[in-house]
Length: 231
Ligand SMILES: [Zn+2]
Image (cartoon, rainbow, N blue to C red; front, side):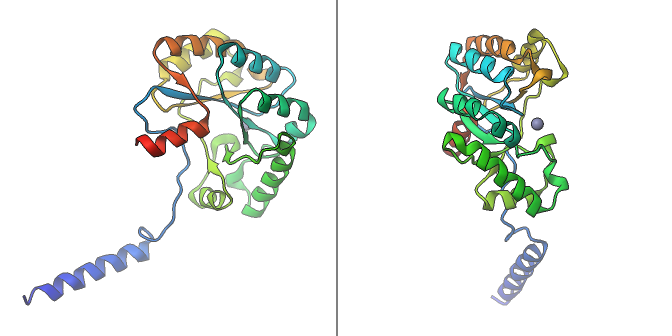
């Protein structure tokens, strides 16, 4: 009996140390790189659009295979091409934000990041949707930024497969890299624009080969909903 108070003191002491170090109370929403799922589901994502060269070609390639994808649109490009933003939404794809001016968010004060996000939201709103997924340009992030974004209603989305398509790679090379690195719950980083001109062609190859391996294509939003239920 006489030992019990020591146990209580130790427990209180340990709790105090944890609280002081922020391990218990800190509310932390991690950036998402992939989804822990057992099913063979995978998400294709396209950054930096919309773009007059690649967006129509991507929409055609995705429609031909009946594949939904997630477009991380750049606000300034969305403002220039509202018809393409509407076309992406009309194609059944998920509209997400890549910020307005492609600024690296981990190097910005929060108020500037939020102002950039607001501008992007207004440009993307022509399609009637407010995005809830955000991909930081350059992939830079920190915990404080991710938490602030979460309080604003955004999930920060990174990727787990990067074929570096923006380096003007050929379609076959892009496809081989994606297929060889694919795994259940993966998020594939692809791009729009002139530097990624071969990406629409690669999409058809990626879909055919991964479907042959039993993969199903979903949007990032759907991938994350599976994460919550499957674990
Ligand atoms: Zn980008």
